[in-house]
Structure formats: structure tokens, C-alpha cells
Length: 206
Image 1 (tube, rainbow, N blue to C red):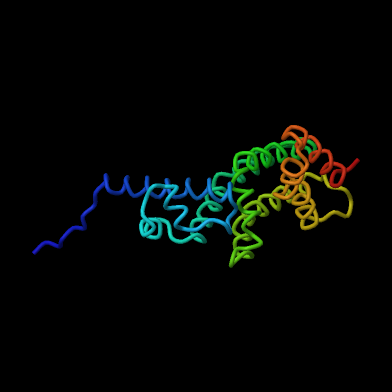
Image 2: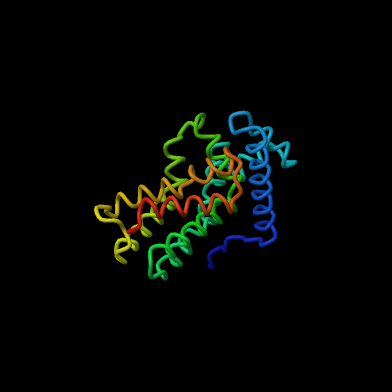
């Protein structure tokens, strides 16, 4: 007697994926417009035009939906591509310029998600874990860049890799871009130029 093969419907799978995407898009809009704390699952369901139980079945509760939004931002940040470009640079100045351009693109591309993340942190039930998820890949990329700068001999005397990675986070981390662009109203071009100059002054040999 042959074993029963599990039924798989490509059309049903596509519909489920589309529903999940609608939920995430609706949640992203609402979290951005109202703030994470002010949005309920019922609000997300209404915005997406589906039932509340469908939201839970397809994407989970608010915390899971936010985690998915943050995870998507991380996966589309281009962190590894930026590190690869930096590693092809032979001198510190060009390496920092490549890092500035790459982190600028990632922050600009995921501007809405970064805003949502910062807004959710004060009220999220697992803020520490959420922040770790949102920044771990980013910080590892900066550490890889710090190692490259050290190997090329570009760093000022006395600056070790760990300290360099911390200073790169100061200059190019989420908070740096957010401070200049969102809070101070700078253009992305102006922020990129200023942060690159700041990093060069802190890190590179004269």
C-alpha cells in the first residue's frame, strides 16, 4: 500500500503569502503613522481588509509582526555587500567612503522600519531582544570593516579593532543617521559627507 502524499496547492500557498504581505504592509503603515503602542491587531486587520483571526494565523500578534518587519529590514540592509566593497579598498579614506555610502543606502532604504523600531523600543515587551535583532548584523559588519582598516594600517596609533568598531557605530550606526536626517533635518548627502569626515578625523592616520 502506497503512502499518502501530502497535498500541496501552489495557488493556496501564493494566496497565503500575499495575505501575509498585506498584513505586514498594513502594520508597517499603521506603526509608522500612529506608533507601535497605539496600534492593535484589530487595527491591522481592518487596514488589511481581513479578519483578526487571519492576522494571528498568518503573521502572529503585534510582537511577531514587528519582528518580521525588523527582520526584513535587516535582510535588505546590504550589510554584507557593503563589507565586500570596503574590503576591496586599499586605503582608509576610500574604505570609509564606501562604508558611508553603504550604510547610508541601507538606512535610507529602510527609513520607515528604522523609525518604527525606535518608536517601539520604549514600549515593547522585549525591547532588548528587539534591539539586538535589529542591530546585530549591522554591528558585525562594522566590526568586519574595523578589522579591514586595522589590517591595512589605516588606523591611528592606539586604536584597536574593538574600539574602532565602537567608533564606527558612533559615526555610521542607526542613531547617527537618524540624528542628522530625522531629528536635525539634514539631507542624506549632507549627512553622508559629515559622518565620513567625522569618522576619518577620529580613526585615520593623519
